[in-house]
Length: 307
Image 1 (tube, rainbow, N blue to C red):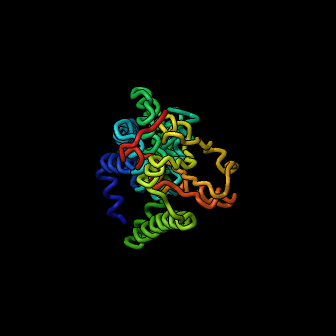
Image 2 (tube, rainbow, N blue to C red; image 1 turned 90 degrees about the vertical axis):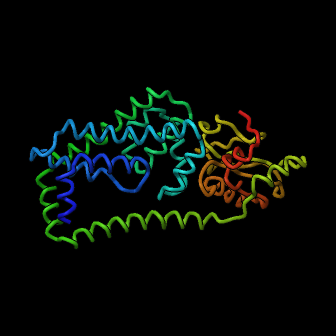
Image 3 (cartoon, one colour; image 1 turned 60 degrees about the horizontal axis):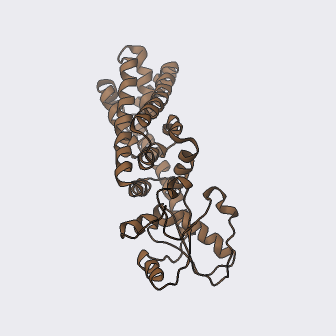
């Protein structure tokens, strides 16, 4: 464990840059504790507070700008990719889009305080056309608030943090093992939450090819778009009915129990679509299925969308 602390002492700014950059790219390696520890070192005169803050902000901006440009260029595919590599439940696209639709670029001020939100919000900002200068301004201010609070906490409670670090260092390999166990428990809990969610929503799907064939045969089913209005503005499957995502739990579909109903979203494993499909089945609809791959699969197959 002492090796880790010597590493931070020797390569403080480099460690901060790497940790913040990797976390903002989406890896589950929290940088906040590193910023708190380096903030505690300011009292020893080993680091410069302005330089430490500038490095943290610059690293976060670099990673977020990568996702912004990717979202601007590749759209929904980037959002889906981010949620696939995330350890959070697969409703992340819907939740992020809901928050960004309500607050816009202002949500970037607090994005980094919400695990998994920063990367998605950056990609979504590019996807919906937030001006680059606006994105950089609000994302930079958000990074300053996030990193500054961690550094300030470390500086204020430096004595207590020093005692904790000394205690962990004295434990040696057992201290490192303790940190590893805590991290493993955190990851395991998130993975179990995802597994439980996916298992509860297991049901038959319909493919894009099958839906297109139904359209071509004139057997047009009822198609429901269960995304936020912000994402629906990017285009919907022709004839799709927009379902208000915030009021999804109270949504009631009018029709006959034997009507063909297809539900799609823009999230990995069709989580939102499967949730609404389960709800409709409880209402008596027997022929309701989520669309495999959602709107992204429809667009990737070269099929048209309407705005």
